[in-house]
Length: 229
Image 1 (cartoon, rainbow, N blue to C red):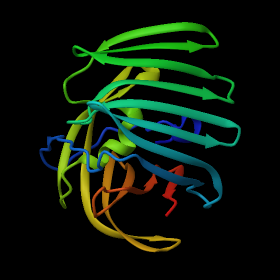
Image 2 (cartoon, helix red, strand yellow; image 1 turned 120 degrees about the vertical axis):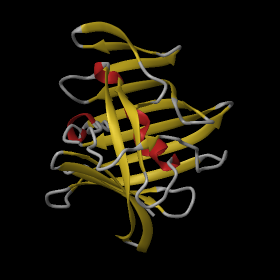
Image 3 (cartoon, one colour; image 1 turned 30 degrees about the vertical axis):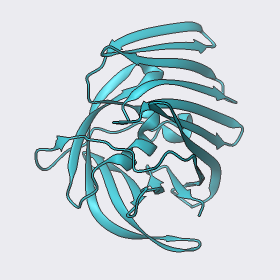
Image 4 (tube, rainbow, N blue to C red; image 1 turned 30 degrees about the horizontal axis):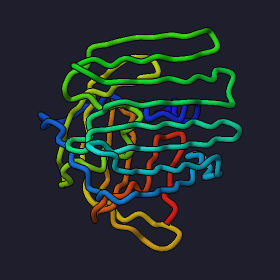
């Protein structure tokens, strides 16, 4: 995900699977009480701290709200996604990036097999509507909704990744590589290692083995997220 350091968006790569993959079934592993997560962002090349992130989850009726804020230097990226409580599929979202030469804001809605995005940019207002399949997930909810996959070594699944910022979609594959220990400042944490690959490139996620499967670490090749314990 080379774009992460620029746009702070989970730009997923198409995965090459070694065997037929199952469909992606998601179920929220967290409860209905509010949840708060904090992350330190470092450069993968040298480990230098370059930013921070907070992700809050709360229940509102039949939806979960994923309230996310990413900071890199003077840039702030605020994303609020609403996903269905029963299967974590996207309902709507907002996003605002400030502090760059290309600041923008957008509003996204999903309804009747379509995704509509309305954006305000320095070049003026823009809008687009695209058809999206039933297996779609919104790019800006990926870090949290991946927590809801059926964790088991060797599990594979596919979904359609929708990127609202440029109104595009791509078929994606995921694979659980197995359990690994991640060294954290306060001690080791047992995790599931989730991988996405394309050719020789890959992106890696580590989620806690125990429910609610917190995102412990994320490495996109350019930056690394580490959860603050």
